[in-house]
Length: 283
Image (cartoon, rainbow, N blue to C red; front, side, top):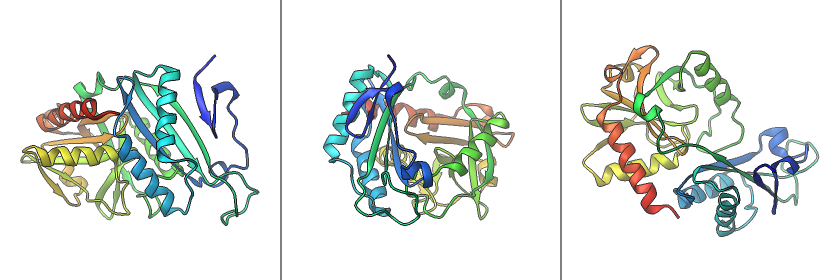
């Protein structure tokens, strides 16, 4: 007996889970997804993930497969059935199953699948050592604000990072850092956190959203602007955020040490206050 997963209204063993070869996510990448972290058996930032999913669906003209409350309840049921203390719930909505053709099929119900992954989130050793990042061209499409399942460019970027003994890739467009292959990107200079403002060029990260709110409630200064990879090389600190890693310090970019090669105080503090907030507000 393996994990219990969710497929279009049914909770089934992962070995019995089946999706049609005619599902449009399989054929076209015609779908959206969310990854929500779990701490102490509870979802983190659930409302924000639901809000972002709603936006992605609207941008693609895709119908909800259930109500938002039913979606959250399904997540909680998977957490309970799989006894997830720390980890993530992955879910995706696709335009559904139809004969292969590029235009939207008529009267085809959307498809919803979800599964859990157990991961150690709180005591991540990478938070103590920091991680390495390499830069690369941003070859993605122009609607990166939609959390689409079409992730081939990110897969290629992440593989390039792994092959260069790095944890993450920072993508560069017109001389400026957009974001990581699966994370938001930040640098710190003279105590000010610098990150790219939201636009179609980057994903509106849920963890980013909470971090920005937390900075506004503390004495951490935020400057939302474009920055170059050269600025990153000269930064006092750098870090990344994502739902599955929270805040991770970056200590090396393209072989150049950042902050003397050790995690900096701003990144450490933001990680601590994010975890405190996540535990306080998890639902």
